[in-house]
Amino acid sequence: MPVKWLMHFQPNQGTTLTSQVMAEACAVAESFPGVSRDGRWRSSMTFYRAVPRDQSLPAPSDLPRDLIGISLHDLPNEYLFVMRSQRLILRAHSSVQTVMDKLQSYKGRFFINFEGLQYKWGDFKLRIGKCLYNPNEALRGIVMEVEYLPLSSIDKSQRVMEEFYEIWREAVASKLLAGQFINTEVNFVEYGLGDSYTPQHTAVLYGMCVVQVIASSNKNQ
Amino acid sequence: MEPQQQAGSGDAPPKQVAQAMDRLGRAARLIAEIRLGADRILEALLVSNENPRLSEKAAELTLGEEDAMRRHFLDLRTVGKQLEDSGVLSGALRSRGNSWGLHMPLVCPDGAVVAYAWKRQLAGQAGASAVDRARLALKAFSDQKRRFFPQLEDDQLNRSNNDTIKFPPTKRPRLLHRPTQSPNIDSTEQKPMLADILKSIQTEAPGVTISTYQRLEWSKRAESLASTMNDSSLDQPKEQILSNLSGSFNEVAVIELVASGVFRVLVSLHPAGSTDPDAVAFFSPNEGGSYLHSRGMSVHHVFKHVTEYADKALQYFQSSDPNKALSHLLSWICSHQSLFTKNCSKCSKLLAMDKSLALLLPPVHRPYLLNSKDHDQDFATAYHIGCSSYDV
Image (cartoon, rainbow over all chains, first blue to last red; front, side, top):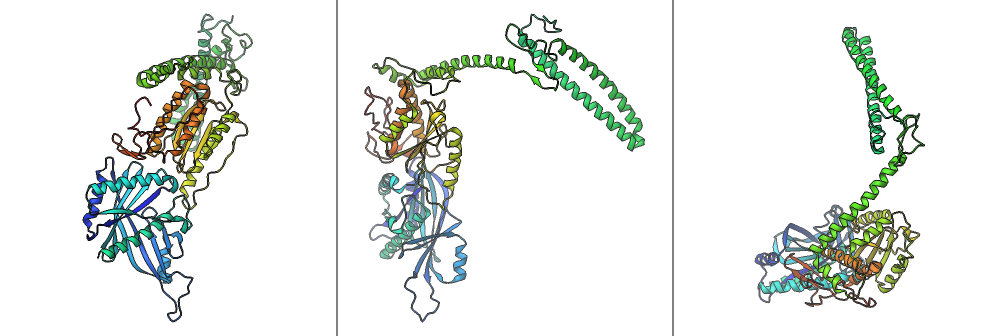
């Protein structure tokens, strides 16, 4: 599947993130000639915490306490789990969420939704979205996903993505947005992932990105 | 000479043949009418038997059919006589060829029509006129090329060191004139063999995997690539290292070049087993399906543009050095391994916005001009569409 990069918006020191930034970022995307809007997109993330069966006993150390579940916009029939501590990723059918609800071994602690607009630009696909904390829909961040359709090799597409990132950063800076987009850097090898891009790579990117988004939004509050 | 009823002996044999076929057709129709008439009569009898009230109507119908049948029989007799007289039914003219070497179609006792001899003759004539038509078409194409692609014309004129400037169209009649020759009988032209070319390209570009296929083998592989790509639960399979699949090189029609993670290129050879490239197309390594062939087009913009440029490169190689067109083309293709990493030789950037296309593309134009010593031809430069000058 085509390679993707994931960036999040880092507001300038002392400024707070508002929905206005989302509109401005979309305006930057739309200012490039040849860009066309391609509908909306939506992904969601659930932060699970282990529910110990017997409260008196200490939790077994080999079981992960925290689990992230991700439903991606381009894979509606699948659900991915990321265990960041163990560096493990699991791909399952989307009905596993029903299983999780019934088992009650892990309970969803909080939820994050990503939703926004999708653009097509030649061989690139751009997705700019708000990162919303469920249930109160508080804006936690702005993310942007960039996909380069012709290539699936992370190594071979590195330079193309880097140059695109530079072009995007320059455009954002020239439109005087109150901050910058920062790329999510991940060492995929630690997660046992190879050079060929897969949904597991996307899951890891989102896992890392959200942690950075939450950290940055906590810092600015 | 046998007296002919309508086609006089002075008529050209093709006319006689045409008339004979016409009469045979008419006879067949009459026989069909007679059969239908018989059916209707039998049906009328059946109806009147089951339903006595309708017997009068049935009788009327029967009489009508009888008249029609009688007419059909008379007509059939006439046609039969005509056919007999022209020798179709008796084979009287079979051994006796007339001046054109044509034989009348022969109707055997079991009803089969044997027309092989004259059919072959007519096919031969059609073939000869096809060669003429093709020659005229090629002349028209080369005139158009001169009009619309003057830069290619200039390239050939500038190569003053080459004293045998050949235009692409002159290649084709040579192919047409030897349709039945084995493609390997090229010793008089001293062209390199396909196996040698592929071996040397493999040494020159170890990062590219080269495989060869017969035409049908490739169609199957293209389809299987589609299903592999769609099955996203599999990790991308390693490119299968396929050594030459077809046992001998005599029927190789498709060459596949794969640079892992960068491109998949298809080159077709015409005729199969020769070293004459016919068409070329670039694709993403993650594309699959029946549209993957040397005249197909990638769904991605970058590869579409490279393919368009490759068509021009192929024409250039064919016209400037036909014996080595395949070697040059394959070398040029292999230089594209750095398609997504090599900066433009003019603006030094990798991605550039093409204003007219409104697309962000890497340098997709790699100059293909051959210099006088064709060793060390490395096709090392690359340009964005907007950065490449007109005659590159």
